Image (cartoon, rainbow, N blue to C red; front, top):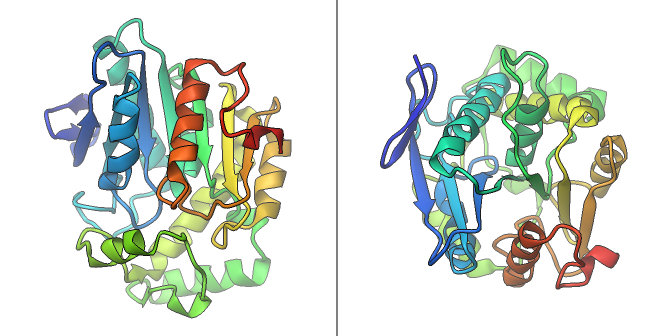
Length: 292
């Protein structure tokens, strides 16, 4: 069946209704942004930045990806190729809706891996829809072959022998952001997944590895954003990913940025950089972080 966009859902090509949120631009729209959320998050994650971008003439769309938020079969891994196909289908539907406006694709953490795979997948029946640019925020492209083989084997074994097991990540002692009230609010949100099935962890590492391998085929202009205090995605795979891209992306390194760059205490600095890059990719970013 054909994918379609309804008022509050995006119906995929295989008929799954994925909850959809949109934030129309205030006044005259200058651009459209499709935002793909990270692992265990959902579309509401973009509520604050999308409202801010709306005031800068940017219309934002975000849907709950397969296995997350209020999507069908939440907490069950949806599959890398299916998630990439969803992104391609959604972008294809937006073209006629916003004729004449540039469309950008933003991926946050895991969403960045989905975005890269959507724009490069050789298995897709049709070429990826054209976008004016791709924005990778704290990109999670370090699973699969780029992950330590012992850890990779342990995840594979767990996923194939006891996939129902869950993990919270508390034992890793990693901090995702300096915005503690925001983190606590996410902890109270029933649609944010806190107990993750091992097969989903295995699935996301495979997705990130596939996207890492596919990075040399990424053709659109790219903006890569990373925080120096990121304790979730290591810096080394991000540097390697940048080197694998066919042309050097615009890169911004935020000294006070954590993994949740779009929700940190200094998030508006990042929001403003993204809006400025969408307006003019050739101009220096307002934060000056690009120079780093």
